[in-house]
Image 1 (cartoon, rainbow, N blue to C red):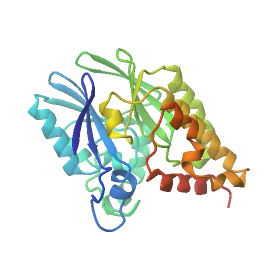
Image 2 (tube, helix red, strand yellow; image 1 turned 180 degrees about the vertical axis):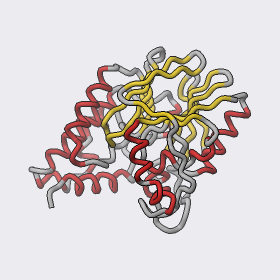
Image 3 (cartoon, rainbow, N blue to C red; image 1 turned 135 degrees about the horizontal axis):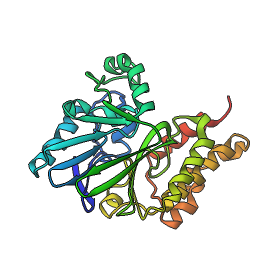
Length: 288
């Protein structure tokens, strides 16, 4: 685990993108869906208060996060889950004594799938047992205060229909969860691409100066985050995937070629493991 400091009052807890490092030898969602791509959870900290934005890929990771923040004087924790996917909720048991906030849709999904998640039967092992469910839910928007920070939490349909992003207007910083990632988004809902484009435009209207995704390059995150062009890069990539439905020649094109303009603009970086993500995306959106 690496502790990064991308902005005043924001701490990133980053793991993954380490050659030869795996959580387990056999295929599993921790390695293949998270650590191989690199994953960060974030904390917004002021004085003795902290908002934990996602609880990482295991309880052990979450305990590390909590211990590191307690060591610097944090006593009051509130958790916000960005969405229901396992690599974002796995460590919540380490914060079981705290308020856990999520969109109503996230709570609905986790409640419905709780038994399968705890048994390791949803996406395979490891199971998350116990799965701690949200204690407070919201729809659309919610205001949160953490010390001097005035935060706006926004429900969007990007990547998944239950996503919650954090907007910090005083800093023009957007904590994006999995709604944006580098190199490309993972398509969890191939029927939702039009809705994703609509809500990506909503994020663009915020005009963020810096964007902090959960899956990204640790060097870029350390440097303060991504430019607003990451939103445009994601929009352009989704439109390419939509074209793949009717243009078979695009389906076999190299990822670097498809996102060349965004790479040249410096909005994203190329990370080879996203070739696997891209191939899965093409398969997901292409008619059988």
